[in-house]
Image (cartoon, rainbow, N blue to C red):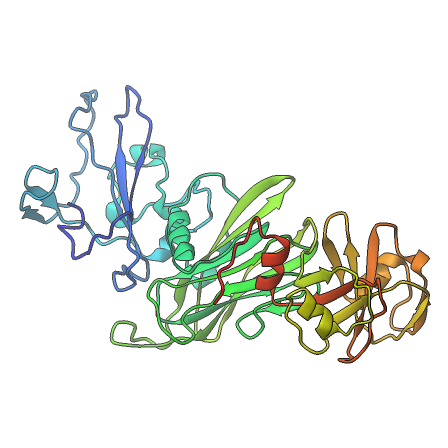
Length: 430
């Protein structure tokens, strides 16, 4: 009925209502919140329409009091008997601009839109928050990180539907971006190892993977982008959104418009899964920082596969063929078995066998092993802790690996997870 009396299309599974508790002094009230996934249905840049609470017809009679000013009359239109109503629908006033919402996640103390407020200030203060306040985007001046909240957010379902549609993945740490515009927004992250994951570098050596990137070529009105780690390294992360291309068409006509978006971060903090939201909007070529934090992860699964020793001398390519693993020149590492001189420019990876995770990079490995940085040095097998295995990069395509030597190969993350985490990730062949 709400959609019937307003110029809106109703999509399935996008309507939400909030029910507040009741007492003798205040009857039960219901607020209707509808999320419209179609980007062409917009109200001042927002895709959230909030209907004000309607008073129950069974309200107890209040004590005599001074006359209250009557609310402004609303336009009425006769319904066509298609809803549960009694044939009449009330035209909804246009919701307030998105800037009226702070988008702070938990939703305490937000102001209601002036066009939908009840005239009684006392009841307004007592009225609980609706879900719409957490869903409406904020102005650029108010781009803020949402507080972690255990309450359900309506956009959780929106993200779930879009990620499922794109066959996206999740893991110990994952971040998802949604918006409702033909503009090309891009999700970026700087990893603890200094790599930047974005559309031009979708996979990091530490196992971060941008597995969904949208609106770069084909255009969607319901886009989503997603970056995840199956198992994440510890360190500092920084996430931001970049408005790469502010496209225009017959509906989105302003080339300088700010595009509202939401970013959801899911990670583990003190053995508890925490969900945080960021509400923002980005103008042309603008970068908006969403999250920046120090994270304690369970270790980097990375984009590597460790091959078992072979009983004959073999090249990296031959070993990969024996184990059905893809190989490209420069992607092979051999395990250190004796004292060896290692040049300062050689890459190294330390494999922690007990957890099947990695310390990645020469500087990180040298620091962990207590060895000097940026210098040629001899590394002894005793320098490596028991249970760990140090791999040194070889750029030679024809190098013969001695018998009984473990080998590590850098592969695409999809391949690494399919082989090492097959119980969690079952990828279909392209």
